[in-house]
Length: 285
Image (tube, rainbow, N blue to C red; front, side):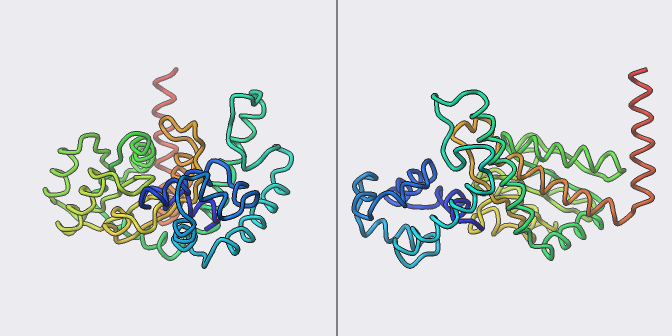
């Protein structure tokens, strides 16, 4: 995981003094390179000791190693995305539309690349096994995560799988308790701390279902409630109403799951997709 993605994933779990540092660095990563540890502490209205604790929380022994590693990371990314301009800087009111779109596109491309590059294929294979052998597939998420759950439910239904998108938290809990067949429950939450989604997976697991989490937070309640946790690598923009970059990364994982499931019964899948395509085309004609 990149340094910036690590900060994004852990920011919500940090205490207030460390969270202020995380948010400052998320908005402008180059601040670590430009400022001394004392200057950063003052800018974040905290202490030098808190900056050191922040460094340790994201896997570094101190401020100097963080500065060196982040400088290297930003340099590589600047070269990789130089054609898009000002990579790593936040979208501002001074940006032209082209600059804002380019910055967003760079973040989304990077999210897909990092998510796929760091994907644990063993966990993915196990999740695919659970979905493929399930008689019933329950999917749940809130807000933008619900749209991602809906996308996977739609794909699975198109190939004849018994997939259920659960929109209401009470409905979700009831579905996990009333286990009538071999079940897999899949929960979606970017931060991994949405109470309703965590409870959905916990209840499903307690009632014998296999559980899968799609989240960016490795040490989160949702990941701990899952038998198989799949992680996105995301740096979300401040313009994240309904989520943007995080949603793109989750959709990439959804496609990986679907392709894996579809390949298990390739001929059957192709036939199902063709038949549903013909049926829907007839409705438009």
